[in-house]
Image (cartoon, rainbow, N blue to C red):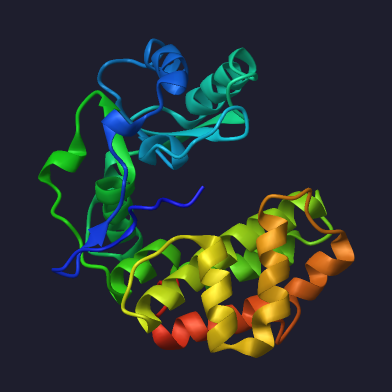
Length: 257
């Protein structure tokens, strides 16, 4: 669900509702279960609807970020916790990062720091958020979050016909509408990651895209599209390419590596 506290402070800084004391009590056993299986030297954070207090049983995911936990261990623990708490949440997703992911002045590292500072609530272990400032709600933050959209467009095209088209279309829809949220944030001098609100607002700005944006919103939480429709989303001059081109022009992309 959308974070009702997300926006911009009077000083132009990002504001969100992510706080440790907003984790709904019904999800505390899930958090305790995971924390009891992670070494104390690993930094653990919660983000998403559980962090901002809008999560609902049993349809919300419990999204956790670890810094210092190997990826294989994070995946295995997430699957274990998902099975243990299937009646409480849709799933337990545990992301695995390393401290180096937050270092340097590149767009990706900057976006990682913005996300950690404003969208994550610390649960256990060292807290790297402690030394981070509040970040401006600006094009640099929007680029840090979604400046990889062109790279992903190429990967999505390469993935066509190689797996589950429904799952691919959901990934395409969710990431592309986050990029649209970045476009809305910069265009309107605001800050949002709300996919539905972004689709509605950008449909006003670019009415020709309204039907496709509406379809992307539907795909975010559906069983996804068939392969033919997924291919249409990714075709030359299609909606994803148009979103990517506008993002490149208004905000900028991560440099090629």
